[in-house]
Length: 350
Picture (cartoon, rainbow, N blue to C red):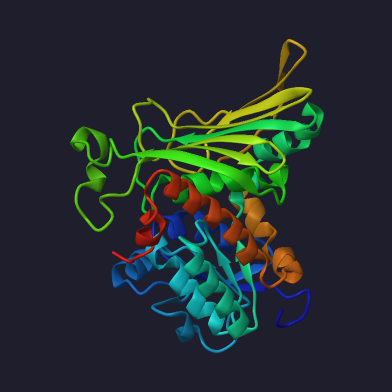
């Protein structure tokens, strides 16, 4: 890092939509050890909105306007359709990139990121924000108590919402990433799925945000079932809209000696029911596990605080290798559901 080990990490915030302005930029600015050197977006309206909001940093159209060697890291949160191409340009220019999920839409994009990483002689870092949640961390700590894992249930169901790249990429990727420490480097010998678009094609009372437009055919729900090479089954549901009253997220790990179940809400949206409940079930008894109080969005604070250490320890190619494993599962799920081209088409800019 320029300026020595004790210098603040210089970060450029790239992407000034709602997530960039409201979730990432303010937390980056108040994090000790990090200096935000610029906020970047090609859209004049978003730049103006950011500047009016008191960004307190240079607001520019391109990262090159910040000057050579201006940043130690670019945090990229641009819309999903442009995310990989923006990240690849920055990587190829020699600047490390922290990229939010989904990291890519298909293996072609994964290869693009890998090539850009090599061309720039730098490194890609991957978002794994939900692993920084207190409740998810506690679940991981308890997994050893359930014995040999046998089955995992994963679901993220939104009452109403939107999905720029489809529910599987936007929500399912986060679910699979949250249990990656449980599954390790497991590969799947069986993958089957169904998709539905009831809310995409429904009336205005369902999902008016999806009428027409370039991505109008993207599914709103994916249900999948996977089996690892060593026999662990995984049931997955990702729904960007539903008939439910409130949004909910579920992670359950069943093992030979018991199970742990987390019910919570991922994300930082205005969802009223945000209390997390973690239970440990064994020998006919179910015990509620005490969870420390957690503020909404604390997982982002923790991940941002870890960025300097993460960058210092990063290995080129590791994030892309992990992304390839995930996107292969995504493509196999879509193929099983007869939607082999969905992941590829979702990557095309509107």
